[in-house]
Image 1 (spheres, protein in one colour):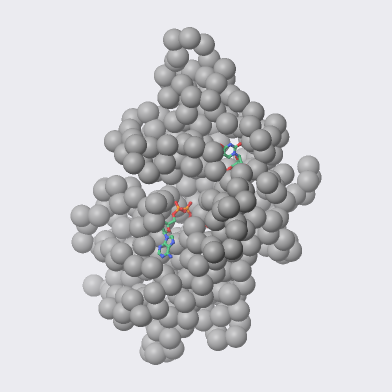
Image 2 (cartoon, rainbow, N blue to C red; image 1 turned 90 degrees about the vertical axis):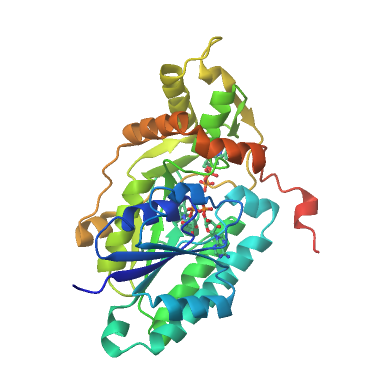
Length: 361
Ligand code: NAD
Ligand code: TYD
């Protein structure tokens, strides 16, 4: 029997990482090691369906801990790394950028450095086949106006501390490919949504605020536009990219579903009205316009034709079907989100850049 393909997934207890782990582990011939620091955003409950399987292993570790990461490389002997571990919330990066620089920039540097050390001592054929895949965001390209679309050749113009940290990580990974020959591949995707999404992000926040009958906060006038990608479509794309992507290439991944924030919020309200009606009016009555996010990017849009033309991927979920699945999932799975709301994050406003949060230590 052929040797299993061993994939080291960083950040596998997070939203997208857990979707990747759930996608890979049941497949014959794949073994996964999930390396995760278990920050506030992590949730091992998201892996209940696969964590008992023989093809799954977990290591609680920080990607910035070089000695620990080195041991994990030696012991697990991966054929590929899928690097998703990061601080991921723009609003938190506004309030406290330090963790973003530490995990996303320093952490990615240390992980790349350990991957390089490991890769350099592999036998030739294994070294040739090895891949280091960095999972990044379209936010590195900055914002678009009413027209235009991000391609792989768009210039980097990150605006938020989060985007700047991810842009730095992209540059580090690319440089480790170019300078040291580490076989890297990168992907930049749009806003993901779907089950197991931490409720600080727009879509799960709105669902839970709506269910609780609380004000649904729309930043500014809700005119900003995002492209929405169903997380399971993304997980499929990531497997294709790590297995068949060309070394040194970047791939944009998008959902082909641009919506204003207000359209997204109203869509969720309408689904809740149908699936879990309120006694005293529509969920739309809960919408409240609140002060805008500082530096708020106006629009993101992704051209994913490179991925479609080279690797044959396209999103299978429409925004309407994906959003309904997502709302239904939160209705059916309060065992997953209720402990988060009760113990970790109750939906308070983040990202207003309070001066004390950015003052020097
Ligand atoms: P998430 O915040 O849900 O999960 C991140 C995971 O990384 C958590 O489990 C956390 O514990 C872990 N982690 C953080 N710092 C770590 C460290 N120093 N060492 C080890 N583990 C650490 O994030 P997500 O939404 O799943 O995003 C995953 C990746 O995809 C990130 O790199 C993010 O920048 C990128 N991305 C996300 C989106 C999106 O819409 N969510 C869009 C584009 C790109
Ligand atoms: P978010 O989910 O934080 O993702 P990102 O900032 O990475 O795009 O936010 C999506 C959009 O929704 C963004 O334009 C900010 C807006 N937003 C609100 O209007 N209200 C909210 O409570 C949140 C969390 C976000």
